[in-house]
Image 1 (tube, rainbow, N blue to C red):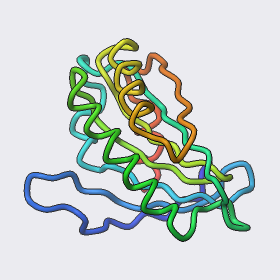
Image 2: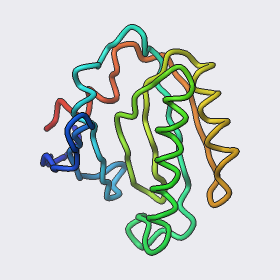
Image 3: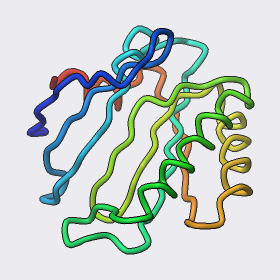
Length: 152
């Protein structure tokens, strides 16, 4: 069981996604997650059956495993690239941003592994500041997102 406390945060303009913030622990380490609560309406969309995880190792995490200083801006730029790449490569939906243990992971759902690979290639080619790691995995039920939203 994940010990999360959730709180909706007014981060969206009309027509944009709404996000909430959860905090807890993962493998004994502090964790923060931003959850795209707007994506709940799409959960299980048969056109987006593949989970894409893009993990970014932090360059110099603080003692809690979180970024600090100028790295926040670099991570924001990577997130913008991910969102742009998802739109450009057959669509997709960014649903979670998880930070823990010296990593930030961006979890999305895409149409296919090939669409995920194309998005990652686009992000990787535009990112010189950080290593870009990734995986694709079948997840037609959107279990990772549902795991976070069920605990709110």
